[in-house]
Image (cartoon, rainbow, N blue to C red):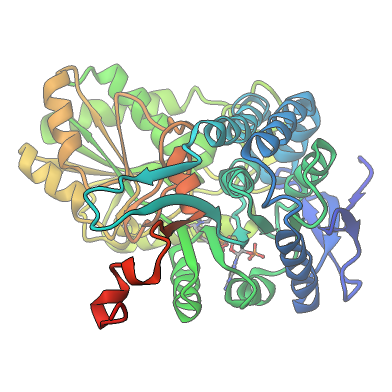
Length: 505
Ligand code: NDP
């Protein structure tokens, strides 16, 4: 067995022990072996990290740097992320269960791209915008500039720990903010590794901090802390709602990226092979533990049986196993809690009258006995009102809903509390575009899925959250807008504004 790694929290430019001295264990979900230990933080650790972030912000050591200077350091960090690809992808896979095939390609590249694109954008963004003096009524110069918000908190989940952290810290740092990250307790390791990389790349002490510990106590305290000016959260809608309530009390800025139950509408003209692969990719990528997974398959009644048959035949060819093996298609479920959630939703589905066309069981025997593995699962004869169709399961579970006409299909797709992702499968470009336009979701994919790029915004409608991550939308979300106005007339009596209350008499 490999040596168990020990980390401190990253505060004020150094790894430090937690206040309590207690540690939390991080396991490999494929084997349940302990692979790392991190401090179980408490409120004192949060206070310390926020004090360090505030001090760094007020000092101007980062916030007052020219955008070009910050950009150079972030570009440097992007290169260092790529240089550390093997270590980062190994640790990401080991602790989160994401396949090494994915983490070593998509995840590392995405983190580097978030940094590089945020850096490139701050160089391009107009430093100031000037308002014209006429038509304003007097000689005045008005200009508008963007400033950092201050101290940000980034709270991240366990499904894509590095990518979702970078979606937050890259734009936050680019705009000159300081940030305190709180990764999920089961996957804190790569966020701590990134702290070291950012520090070595030249991000000054105190600007980027990582605290580790339970979300229910420490995360909650962080989100409600008066020293936090902006919170960015990805995770469950329940915790997102709580964070929004906390933020409302202090009128804090918030970005929330929450759950989803994304619909995939197959049109009658669809190529069945494309529809099959699109459906499988939509709900099985990362074993279904993706917020924008396509988990409601809305299919023409006359294609229903043929498509379900094809899905089942193809599922049988997939390799489910150890995420550290390049040949593995689907890795483990990230935790025992999540495995139990999936099991419970299968029970609910059967109780509500959905029919199990495939799967529905925890995998057992051989390697499966050591970790948390669940069969790809397909429910048919689903109605949109069923709980397992309305609620996020976060596992490899597909719910198939037949439809008779397209209006009905669009209605079913939009009849959801969520609005994160959606998809259309069709050979008819114009028709697919029309359906995409009617979907009430932040992203729509046509004949593909899971394309998230740092150069397009990502976020949800309805209970999937608010605000957008990525691209310049993210930079806007990590900055305040300031209007500076200077009256250019020198004499008190000529200043037209003062005359409004007769001061030029
Ligand atoms: P949570 O929303 O509970 O956790 C996400 C993050 O929030 C973690 O860092 C967690 O810390 C932290 N957290 C938990 N409670 C609080 C709180 N009161 N205040 C501040 N931070 C808090 O998700 P779970 O891990 O419990 O997963 C439950 C469900 O959430 C999943 O089944 C799935 O449906 C959904 N989910 C959605 C994700 C998405 O990408 N939108 C990602 C992950 C989950 P800690 O880990 O210490 O609890």
